[in-house]
Image (cartoon, rainbow, N blue to C red; front, side, top):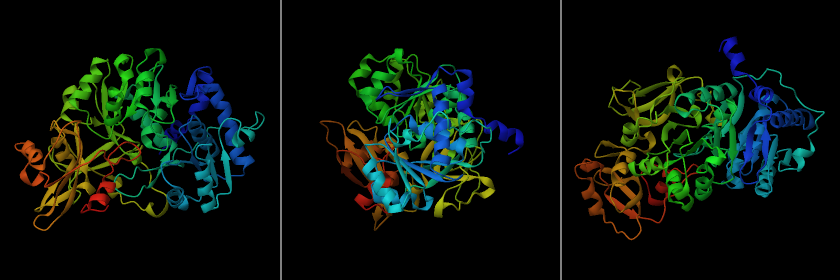
Length: 514
């Protein structure tokens, strides 16, 4: 990275907006009403940075963990770490103390921050790892007691765009979460990648963020890009569909953006307050991690809302592809958009050779928003020619629109033929009795592997395997059609709402354990 680019990427966002729009709201907690103007955020960031470096004696590069509900302090700590040269590590509160301790052991954190809700678990983790400092960060608690207006680190323009700023653990969709390194420079490029179709740079941008802030979807998909351009982030500790419908659907609140998985958008649509919602003021309903159905698109269109499907991952910024919301034809067809401006994308076969349009291939990406690597034993990362292997499979049409097929690790072979469960699921869910469905490969003496469909049914319906297979005729080759069916009340999900295939394989004897 040349010196000009480094200077650009190292800009202190908080200082800039505190100088140019000091009274504008930067952060708000929807649940408590607590806010920060840009001037207040600048004061807090400087004081927290000083307390971390001088009050607690932390050194550049030290890791700080946090276990708490979603809070505006996540962003205060992020910016304070950038100014103090420290590394911010928000943790998944859905994990147990032993799981968390194992996850962060190799990071050797020097400080654990928490709130009353999660204090007991945080202290358990700290004791297991001998973390020297544990502080509550709720108003008036130990962290606030370290702060003083007289003691602050002023903006100094020396933020290293290439140094680790944040560690985000991957969602663990196909295995154990990895500790992905996020840099300040990478966050800037992510913001730039979101400009074209998400309108994050337009005046008065305001994102409602009910997704967990320990995950890329909550903190880096829209929240940090909108802060980079001087907009507002409103956080909520939990996703509640009725609250989201009420808050986002009321034009008086000025919410312009929200990012969720399609299931969550459907839950909002099913809530009572959605009947009164007006979404004509929104600019970006970003949908990731799944396909928006025609029914869902129509429901939101009636309220004036338009979807922007995207594809990406924790390690990729996260945004890799983004959809022009005007291309409803492509959205209905299941596309996740075209590649973002500051990223390169290849589709390759098992030997790493480029595949032609229309042919599924693994997604390889390269660009300045991509993680430089991982912490710990996962630090070694194979990147041929600098290309990051995502482990996802997609095909591309002649206009450059991408269509996600599945995870490489979710694919199974039936009679020697590759089967991608996501392709099968998109057909099975068309059956009128099927509300949701997931497919995994299970062992079979004759075919090696065959498909098991795990389905959630619509209320009052019944379904047999024969009925399900008949609905596939003419849509799926026989070897792709499931050979087994299980009916369940609900599917297991990870923290972002995606179906957990590892959990299904563990419960139903899947033929793949990764």
